[in-house]
Image (cartoon, rainbow, N blue to C red):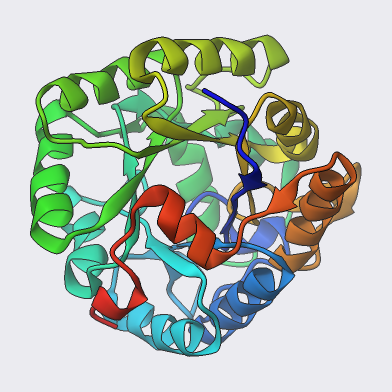
Length: 311
C-alpha cells in the first residue's frame, strides 16, 4: 500500500494497563482525562482512544456514567475523533466492556482481534510503594490472565456495535495471527474497507518490538488486505518513539499516549499526553510528513461523523 500523504496521530489517554503508582501524571478523574485529551487534540492528535477510571482510586472502570463525565467536555472542546475502548481491561466481562460504546455509539471503537496472554506482571517487582491497595494484586495477577477475545466475541462486537451503531473499528492486532483473524471476518463479509489496523508491539504475550517484526506485520497485512486498509503502529513502553519513527518511514500512522508508555524519553516521565503527541509530531514533520486533521482522518477511515454519536 502506498505511503500516506498525511499521518494520523492517535492518542490513547489513560488505558487500563498502567496504575497510579507507576506515574503521578496518569489521568484518573474524568476532569483530568478530559483535560489531557483536549490538550492532546490541540497538540495534533486526530483520534482520541479513551478508557475510564474509578475517580476514587484509579482502577479501570467500565461504568458508562464515568465515561459520560468526560465525553461531553471533550466533544465540546475539540473536533477530534473519539474512539471508545471495547477492550476495557483483561478482567472485565464482554458485557462490561461493551456497555460504554453501545450506549454512546461512537465513530470509532477499538476491537481486539484475538485471545492472548497479556501480562505486565514483571513490573510489580520494580514498585516498592503502592498508592492503592488494588494495584499490586492487579499487576501481579496478569501473570495468570488470558485476555479473552474469541471468534464469537468478535462477531458479537462487529454485529452489535459495528452494524448496530455504525461504529467503525481500530482493529488491534498484537500478533500475526490476529491479522489472519481479521481476514477471516473480512472474508465473512462482516468487515468492510477501509480498515484501520493498529499493529501492537512490545506487550508480553504478543509480538516483540523488533523492527523486523514491524516489517513482517506490514508485509503480511499487505498480502491479506492489499490497498484496503490504513496501517498504524503502537510501540509499548520504551520502544514507543523509536518504533513509531521506523514504522512511519514505512508508511504507518502512529499511536502515542500514556496508555502505551508513561515515558517521553530515556528515564524521563511524560508529564502529560500532549507532550508525547508533540514529540512524535515534531519527528514526523522533520521527516517531511504532514499531520492529518480530524476531518481528514474521518474521510480516510469513512467514519459516520461526530453528529451521529450519542453523547
